[in-house]
Length: 471
Image (tube, rainbow, N blue to C red; front, side, top):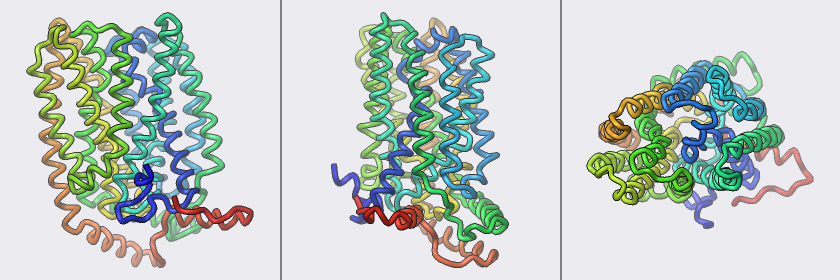
């Protein structure tokens, strides 16, 4: 277990205990902000019942959510490097919690659309890229696969307890959707509390070389954004992540697939959802960075392998008879698919550190890449819902979905191969040269700042505490 906290080069993964505590706050915020949407991987049939909507309408809600956050990813991408995490994360957590509270109290579709817009605004637009950028800055470039694996795995541990509690409530209350309402309220309260904690713990400074000079800082951010958006590896990483997320968006429909094609009871499907989603995140995400580095040459190689596996498993699902007798084999293949999704999800932001992007410009680059990566959220859920709803007798639509997944897997493998080759052929040196040009143009001097430096200075301002020891 201790090896989890050791970096690739043998040094501590976290520079100090305070850096580790900041990371834990980020993990908790990241999971609770998205736990409502994570429930769709376990309780989608119950959520449809609570809100009295069809799968197509659910797809529309998810598309509204995706369109909103993708717009804000771009609109506020400049803010990621210009402002500190303390200004970007806590307030959004608090307002996101307030929005979550009301989601269990309406079945009016128009009201649901409005609440999903608000949820996307607070829990995605500025918040999510800020979390990702902060996680990227938590450790060195060589350890990006490990740190993002810990983020995804840590979220999975929290999600496991959340989903077990919700399904337990659902069963205890006679399989009543009232349990979902209670879950929404409890999650809302936790989000608000975490927002308050984050306000006191997250760093207050940025990593810009221009420091507190507002005009220079704005220029530095603008020049950094111009440079990073011209880097081919940034685009390739974004497109590779797009293919990963596109296949991932099929996940909630695995539950309706088992219900409609194999006629499994709702409670059994929810248990399957917990084992496949939370179990998949914990068992596959935490070691994903280590596995990718050791066996596939890094995160891009790991995603290439994962997309190849998605193609194979999707073809198996196409060929498998859609009869009740094959329910257990179908569940086994779907669990493998889900585990593969989470293995890849824990890696698709790691290449931005691996390619050598400096920490001071990582926020805007990640926000821009997030726009590309999460673009399927604007249309994929609606697409899958429409395909399935229009399928003959509820099953042929699923064959179409698995067929599309297989094609996407092949395209993703090609993108992964190109990105992997470019990163290994001097991407870090090429990017460093671009950063040097920016510094010379703006008259910026000094070495690149790191998040651990800010936290160390924060510790130094508290003489009553001992110097934090490396984990």
